[in-house]
Length: 196
Image (tube, rainbow, N blue to C red):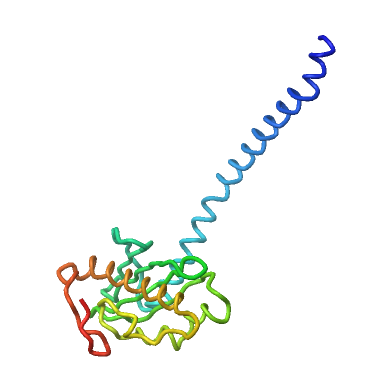
C-alpha cells in the first residue's frame, strides 16, 4: 500500500466503513428491541383504550369495533347489550390535534364527551377538557352543532372550534354506522335551532 493509499484509507475509507458497521449494528439492535416491545406497547394501548371506553359506558361488558371511514375518526365502537356507541375523533387545534371520545346513548343522544390529552395552551386552551365546557354537549341529539349553539371559552376560540369540529366529526361517524338513513338530514339542536 502506497503512502497515498494509506492516507486515503485512514482519512476517508476507514471512517466510512466503521460508520456503516455501527449503523448496521444499531439498526439490528433497534429492530430486535422493537420486535420484543411491540406486543407490550400494543397491549398497553389496547388496555388504555378499553379503560377509556369503560369510563364512558361503564355498564357495557365489551365493545366491538366498527368499520368507519370518516375523516378525523380513529375508532368507532359499539357497546354490547345495545348500551350505546363510542367514537374517537380529532381535529386540528391551536397547538396540534384535539382528540375527543364521545359516548352516544342507544337513543342517539350524546351521553358524554371526553376531551383527551392534547397540547393546547395550558390554563387556556386546555379548559376544553373541563366540565363546564364538555357537559354542554350532554343529551344533545346526534346532529351537527354550530359554534353559535355552544358557549366557547373566552380567549381559546381556536381550541373551542377544534373540540366542536372533532365532536361533529364523531357525530357524523356515529350517524353513518348507527343511523345510516339520517345522515345528511337536518335535526333540531338543544337550543332549538335547525341544523342541516
